[in-house]
Length: 165
Image (cartoon, rainbow, N blue to C red):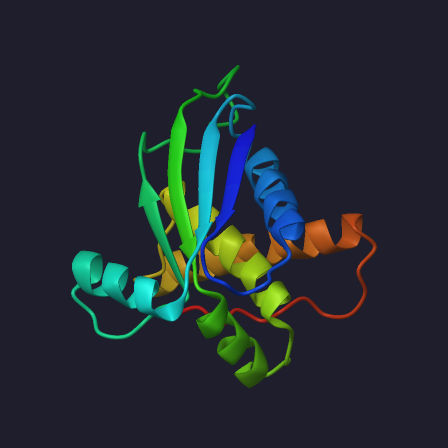
């Protein structure tokens, strides 16, 4: 799996954890090991520009996903998943810090960025949360991936509650 993490935000973030949880999420979703992903960490101004340009919404947001080859998790019957370019995930640590602090189970900016990375991966794989059933599926899968990764890392305590909208 080729995953690039590029921090352009000026904020110190745990890039290794972002890389690790992205790799874990893609493996858990059975994405081909030769697929490629890019994660870019930007400041609030850059995120606001992207949010306006692509979503026509004001203000910075927490995470945005830009799929490339529209890869999907393989079905149980598929022998081998297709490989390709997953796309880009853009994260904003300033928004992540605020969301983590305001969450019912307060958590760090880095924990929120880990959650948002998984959220972004799932969006790249075609998951959405517009409808209640889609939201239940996506957020359930997101929690299972974050919990699994935290357990494998020997991290204790509850995983961050979903704060993405």
